[in-house]
Length: 457
Image 1 (cartoon, rainbow, N blue to C red):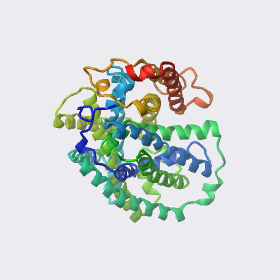
Image 2: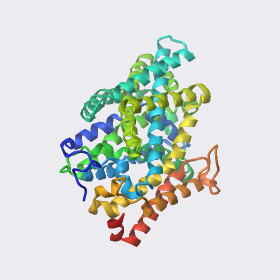
Image 3: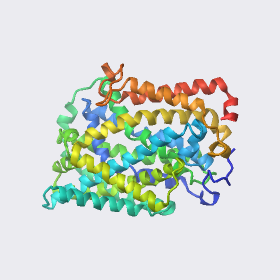
Image 4: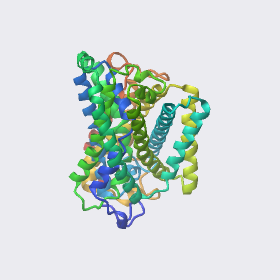
C-alpha cells in the first residue's frame, strides 16, 4: 500500500477535501461556451432532435470515466501522472505524460482562443469594429486573467469554483430558459433521423474525445486532496454529476440554436455567430457568462499542466513555469486567430488526434486500477524515479495497441489510416476503438500475469 509520508503523495495534512468540493470544481469547469459548439457539432452529423439529445446525454456521461479515475487519487493521494508511473513504468510513462501535458496546453489554448473571440464579440456589440489590434488586446486581457488565476492554491481554487458554479451556472440556466420560446421547434422536430452507425456514434465519439477522455488526465489531480476516509461512491457521483449537469444543459443550448444558426459549425468566429441569433441584451449577459465560465477551465488546465511538467522531471520555478505556459498561451492562439483563421477545423483536428493517445492511456490506466491497484494500492517505490521499474510492459504494450488501432481507422489532413473508410472516414471513431483495444489488451496481459504483475510492476 502507499506510504502517506512519501513525497510521491499529497501530505496527509492537506488531504481534507470533501466530495462536495469536487462537485463544484467539475461543475464550474464545464460552464464554458464551447458546450454550445459541441451541441451544434452533434446536429451537424445530420441527426434528429431526439438523437441529438441522446448523443448529448451519452457524451456528457463520459465524465463517469473522470469520476472513476478520481478514485485512484482518493485511494492513494497521488496525482494522475505520478500514479501513471506504476502502470507504464517510470520511463514508459514519459510519452503518455508528455501527451497529457500537450493536451492540457492544447485545451488551455482552445479556451484562450474562445475567450478572445468572446471578448471580441462582446466589444462588437458595443460598437467596436473588428481589427487585428483589437484582437491582440482581447487576447492579452484574457491571458492576463488566466495568469492571475495561477497564483491561487487548492483552497482558493475551490472557493473560486464554488462562486462560478452558483453565479454563472444560474445565468447559463436562465439564458437556456429564455432560448426555449425562441427556438424554431417545427424545424427542430422535423429533422429526420440520421444513421446510427455513421452519424450517431461519430457524434458521440467527438464529444467524448473533448470531454471525459480529455479531462481524465486531470482526474486524480483534485481527488488526491480528498480525505481518504471519504466514500468512493460519493467522490464518483460528485465528479460525474458535477460535470454532467452543466455540460448537458449547455450542449442543449447548441442543439436549440442549430435551427437559427445553421452555419455555426463553419463560422470563423462561432461565438459571434451565437450572439447574432439572440437579442442584444441577452447576448451581452451570455458573453459575460461565457467569459466567466471559461476561467475555471483555464485554471484547471494551467494547474494540471504545471503538475505534469513536474512529473516529467522538468524542475523549474513557479515563475518560469508561468512564463513558459504564457508564451504557449499566446503563440497558439496567434496562429489560429491570424494565420489559420479556422477555429473549429483546428479544434476538431486537435480532439481527434490527441484523443486517440489519451483514450488508449485512459483505458490502460483504468483497467490497471480495476485489476491490480484497487486492492494492492500504489507503492511509493513504484512511483519514484530512482526505484521504480523503468518499463511496465503490460501498460506500454496496451497503450501502443490502442494508439496503433486508433490511427489505423483514422484519417486527417496529415495522414490516412488504411481502414479509415466507410463509417470510419472523416470522423473520430478511432478514439473509441483506441480505448477498446487498449482495454482488451490490458485485461489480457494483466490476466496472464495475475498477482505476479501487481507485485513486480
